[in-house]
Image 1 (cartoon, helix red, strand yellow):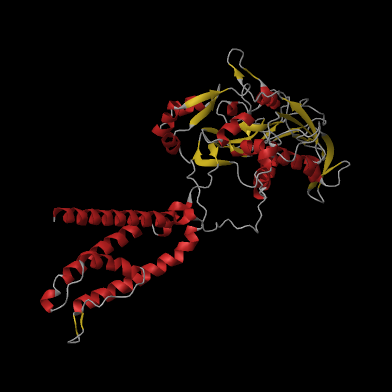
Image 2 (tube, rainbow, N blue to C red):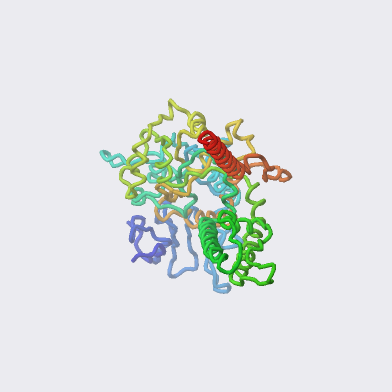
Length: 507
């Protein structure tokens, strides 16, 4: 029998409290007997209904341990309880007491006062809404930063898990990771959040826009233009070689070689293939010029259309998204001492994660506070790991970083050792259904994203465009090509002058 919901019908009262099936407690115990109705079960952990065969009177103990006297109404075909207008209200969770064991761990959970959760935290908002909705009286028990470990010598649990296991608390909260060992003793609610550590590095800054002009076309576009231009030059050279045979004056080969580039720049077409006296035309050469001119038109239009948008678009450095990029770029990786991260990377099936251990250093949180670690990362020489919400929380606490109008850190797409977190409750807890339903409603409302956005909220001036003004740097490549041409031209001129002077000396 694997169901969580089952009942017991019995005439016995001894030992009923201790009945378990497939690790679950019965939802309700029916006790049917001939004698007077008495409170035969003294414990408070199971709801039961006592029925006497020869009497309409019943006694009911609800899931909270409260006793109600009632009677079966044949007229209404329902149970009527003394002092209760609606029979369904006897199992109500309204105005009850709940015991909560917790740790303070920003930004997941923190106590605002002794009786109220900080609603600027993820689990604090979820839990406070649950308490307010049912008007519950909460008893908060601090676990002193102990989530729960099993002592292998004594077989006893401590921390938050121990509080739930030994009935000191009804629910344990604050970033409780799903754990197979814990689940043998407690149950977990629907996941409240996710432990999702990532690499975080310096946010990519502006890079030089000198190479923006190259991005007007992609790699294959530039390759196609280069190949077609070289092919056109070779064909033109082949055609003009036949010009003397047909009575044309053969053009200079350098001018012919530059003609495809001239047409791309929208210069006029030459009259190489037109014989003025006889008004004859070499059609093969003319058609070739026309075809190349039309192709050059489309290339020029495409280039001009994308040029300004791409040339003036701000460019940024490539972000660090994967372990491979981290290894190739070479920043020092910071690993916390006594953390799970070193054995995780060492035993990783991904070789690039293993190679990260070739260039790392340990960090002791007691000697090196988070603010110092963040400053090291912002300098770009080191890279750290952590959950996005925790990093954003420390950024928000830092007065300098909180006032910045741009992101401080970049969070990688590569995730390390991700798993869900939830709240721990007793096996077959009466709070399980209510808590699960509440958590799902909070997820549906997007409250998790609300808190995350509040941590990373940035104020941008929408009136300021990020498009840059044209500077010398944007056209640096063009001036570089021009400078190369001038140097080559000057070299040729100097060489020619020296040659003429040398010939004069010989004469």
